[in-house]
Picture 1 (cartoon, rainbow, N blue to C red):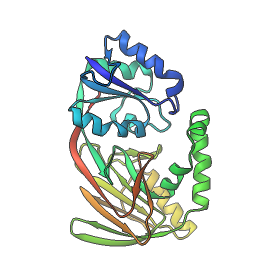
Picture 2 (picture 1 turned 180 degrees about the horizontal axis):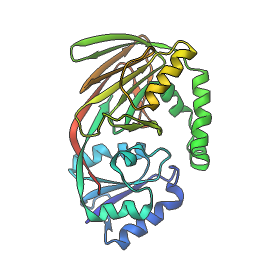
Picture 3 (picture 1 turned 60 degrees about the vertical axis):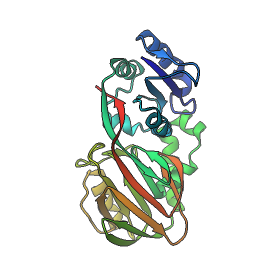
Picture 4 (picture 1 turned 30 degrees about the vertical axis):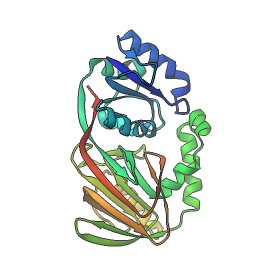
Length: 272
């Protein structure tokens, strides 16, 4: 099997372990294409969810699967697919060549696999610096989070899905494609191959609502409480009174208005 290896040197571990990935794949008998013109049987991404997402259109165009060696900060896709976090274990999955079809989502022509957001987490992603994430990992993310929350401002949004329309005043709107996102959130009844997207709206107004919403989010439930709503659909149209930045898997994905849609089981990935 010949693969194209894509290493993100700015990811949490990519700079120091990229060459280890290359050596381990070769040890397992996987050939690495050195020229862009060479035909390939797969793509292997050594990095985080954002690096993986960038390779989705390439994989779809070539009709090949993607292997993931998780070297990012959160590695939500690896958690979802039970991909080992050690280099040797992840490379072994590639060499074994067993695949699974998963859903991919799209917003503003940008593909993603875990979540796309407007609001606090989008501001957080834009405030993070690669050097800080690489050196300090989660501590750098937490520091950026406090800064993002401090300057968070509610925004008005209109959400259309399945012929319905909801108007909200939110501080955070997330459209998730799987059960794990944000590094710490797990939703028990969501899956990355169920053909659905989940839209979560956070609109807290006081400390009591913050406590209630926190319990729902970290409890992995989709039920509505004061200050929180959850919608499920294969597609969402989101419009805001003013244009707002969108991030998808931590990477810039344009501005609102936007359409979020799922492509069921469109991508093959290497798994156990």
